[in-house]
Image: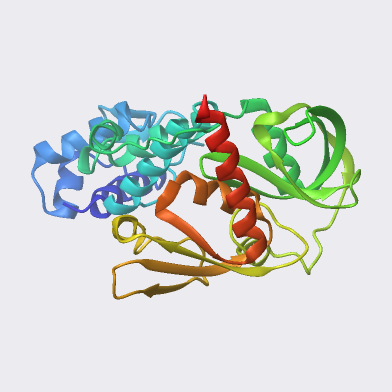
Length: 321
């Protein structure tokens, strides 16, 4: 039976209680054309699982609320919606246990309403999991401070350990957006020190403090547009097209993958595959190409091809001995 219909029974029963009509199993069963035993199970569920303060009045032969201020939350989730929520909780928990605790609590409260009539969190856990490698967990206090500052449009001060320069600097940032990229959480915003929009790996943030100063996100800033402008996380000042050719043995694995939303895919007669897409910085794309070894070849631009060639020579020197 639909969880929506079952929850409708709960709401109807509560409405009768609040109107002082002292409903009971008989009236509930008659209203929804079901057995008295089913009606009794519904009332027990309301008392035990939903913690409704229902008491039985022997004189009036019906129920009333001991706490008249109590109300059931007027909420309905379909079975598929609940399952999706549980999967989102599972994804967050597998990626970073600390920030998933609040989601876990919320899911527990929601499933307490309709858990008998849909998938339980445990059944989802047994059926699906997420395994992400090379990710950096974020401390709960860091994530919550960044999220609060982002939502309330308040500046955030913190100490940042830059991986590029092996140094720690004090930053004050107007946080525009928090996003997860390849399993790692990032904060994007206007850096007062660098006078530009910067990306901060949240696993490298410490000593965070929400400031009193508020800010307004520029109307010209759109995260989707900014992020999708070119391949990967690194954004340079110029944009150019990159074409990578994959050997037939690798093309079978690469075909169908989305490296960038504006990519152009071309398959050759010999089974090799070419992908062309925009790039603003060579840092990340060079790593992806090198990861595929001899199975990937840069066709253009020449600068990226030379960079990969130089790195390949260095790799040969490393293993020469």
